[in-house]
Length: 429
Ligand code: SDX
Image (cartoon, rainbow, N blue to C red; front, side, top):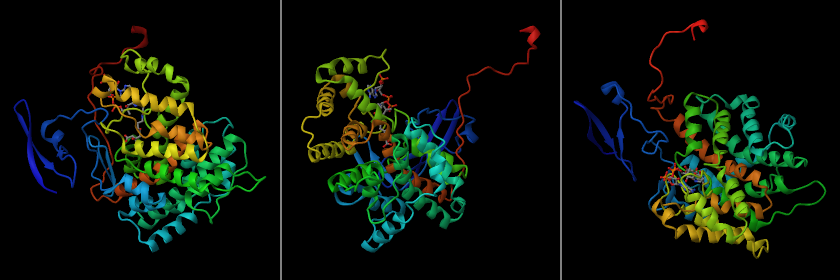
């Protein structure tokens, strides 16, 4: 990387900062020594202008609507490969040969079962628990079952934990779905591919044969690819920060799931579908668009806007195409929610407010309609996001742990509270 320098001048203090260029995208100003040299911190709540790490996994160009995984465009990965191929790419940095892919598929497949006592662990949850609450609890509990892969200093244990996480997350997600539905758990089937296995664990019942629909399985597999990783988003940053203290990978992924649940992040797919349902018909759209534009109204168009994309989210385009594919396969001719979504998108993209603020549909805008059509309840939408994002969290966690310069993340603050003052006895208050 090329290194120039820049000067940060504050009062009569000059701070010489090294400027580092990446392979593509914005350069960074290395301010690591700023506090030591100037006694001042930078201030950037929300990290709108802050690079928290160096990474080689995912690159996003928000202005151009570009998303690359290890240099490969998301459109090409979604079109040509399957989810486990993307998992291999994110973890190892290169697309697998046929032999490497077969070996990786074999290894993942044989880690899909969970410890039988996990089934009893689920019994502690209320049946009406939100599946994301069950996921936070059950994934966090994995560290109580797999002690032999929690020593993060051992590369072999790191890889085993990574494979276990990627392989078991669909099984736990399906168990959360079944538990809340009051149906018996379905064991993984080694003869099925990753996503077909997941569909069968979700929708099979003991009373009849379950046949996986290959079109739906391919569509969901592609949806998993779209959600696999996304640079330093909130949940990935949570996983990195948790991992920086040396916490075990299962606990770190549980932290990532907890963060993803928020409606501003992964919870937006559930919130977007609820919003479309609340809008109900095309005639009501103007009223909701006006609410979204009203500074005094906290309402936002869910599934719209993005911290990085100031252009169309490339994943949203593929998501929209997949949505039509699934509805066509299921013979759903006129889905009122889709009509509302398409018209809402059209209106918003021509509205001055959305144009000026560069608000476009993001990945969550069309995913809910697709997943609902496939038979998933809205409460499972963010769980599906977590299933896919687990490989991204694991790849980023692994990259952080293997970074020789890695240290515990510990930001500072701008303190605006009370200066030092002495204690006042209660008799004198
Ligand atoms: C994901 O980071 C990632 O990469 C996330 C993700 C991933 O793969 O990991 O891509 C997945 O989380 C996608 C985003 C899902 N969230 C939503 O769809 C929720 C609705 N969107 C907004 O909450 C918002 O757009 C965020 C949270 C996504 C981004 O918020 P920012 O970057 O902090 O932007 P902002 O809140 O500062 O908004 C800028 C302006 C504001 O107006 P002003 O105060 O400048 O006047 O745009 C407005 C906002 O009020 N605005 C919206 C809006 N989003 C932003 N107005 C109406 N509707 C919206 N959806």
